[in-house]
Image (cartoon, rainbow, N blue to C red; front, side, top):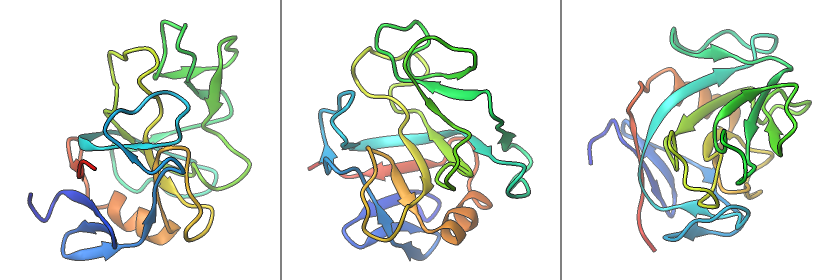
Length: 166
């Protein structure tokens, strides 16, 4: 581990000498993640992309990509685009990236089950804003808005997220 790794611990996420409170999936940590279990997968993951809402914030980095009303994420295990960024109109099951609430105003995409997804292994493991302290996610890692932005401004593609096995 290095100071440039995001390391999940019992007290939060350690990064660059700081510890940030976070929330994880309602299913806790899992060594055997699967679609719909609400768990956060353990292991070493990497940041592979960053999305942001240009109507709500300036880009946190030069490589962040804007999202709009047509941006979705496929969570349909029968879909050839399972666990990929897709655009509306879209007939398969999906999650909207352009949400009414602020949860996905800034999204760091991980390489969990990506880019060649195994159907049913789980989709859309992101780092994003939390609803409130202690409120669990569906499997993502979530932060206070200002903490997420601070982290986003200091990471790069390939930054590791280390979630210890349980």
